[in-house]
Image (cartoon, rainbow, N blue to C red):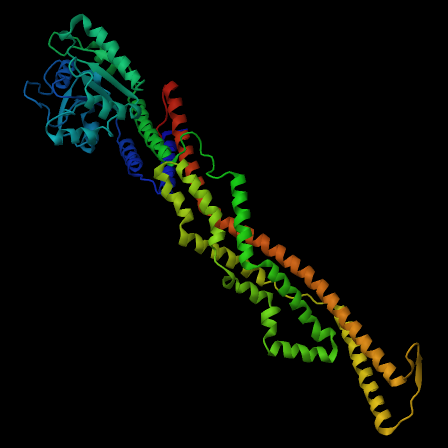
Length: 538
């Protein structure tokens, strides 16, 4: 894993955070600073001396240099602009870096001990001049290491601790707190050192050591000098500082996204299944699947008439269609397309609205806006309508009433029966009008019945039985088709609703997971860098 991977991870987290509607300016600034810092060549890292008015920052720098680098005097504030102290051998290669930092006052030296560090003496953090503190705030995100300077009077200064140390301690791997002017307290210096160190630990600042110095001509700055020149590798300081800043930015995003502990989905599988079942049931009630089944059966019987009801079936079918009766009771496709006429989606949207409303208090306030958008009334209605329309369109493309060769057989027999009825009617007419001879058939109970009447009754009974057979067979096929149509539509509706109900939540879950993964990636790099002697920058 490389620092480039950390940059890519944070960049991905920034994109994910934007999808959640989170403020990303800090993370974007961290990325920009990191890329710019890595773009400068040279082996020197930047160390800043930071502290309040009169704590002796300039005196410390002068003591390290063995001469006057930054003016120190009783007038406050003394340092109004940053002053850089760099090795003469590194002056040329550090010039672009100092221009990026907008540090214009540069003093050089020939000390080999400080060849790989550029030391900045910054303005006071508690200066009465607002521009001085603003300058410190601008530079801190860009420097690689910090020496926080305090004295016996200001070592518990609220500005230094609350507004700087607590804020920057997690974002800088290499830093030191210096208790300056130890000569004023004599033997109590060690007690103050221990008290200051304990105070830092109590504030959760574990990675900062405390040094004691006296920045006078005869003073002692050995601890600070040794800490600066202890053989630390400049590139490692730079990479660790950048990684710490990236991690702080990723931690900030993770906090506001609510994934500090884990990036578990916002809804459990059980909650999703329950909501989907509830919404699907309500949507199906609006579509009216039972009514759809009745329409499908009626449409099948209507399709059977012209093929299986003989010549009278053609007439009744024509009348049925001419009066528009078929579009009312035997048109499953039209019935599906008219689903909006049968109710509103208020009840269908209620399950997801209730669940998401219960979820909102459990997520950080910064992420609630993105989650609340899932249940925006108009948008939710639009998504539900689109899902039902898509399900209906998919199934109506396949709405074709079934047919059967049995209907043709029954239809042929009905034509035979119709011909027989016509013959029987002519025979009876001939008997009454022309007095044609006829035989009789002895029927129990009724006695002798003229043969033409017996034939007519038999043919009418055969036609009735054939009609009932046609209706029963068409009804059987229609009910099978209706059940299949209902099952297919239910599955399609559930799938379409799953897509629209949870698509936005899936996007939010994926974004939260990306942020958590970025934080883990950068954190793992930091852990490795703690024990590594050298890590690649790219």
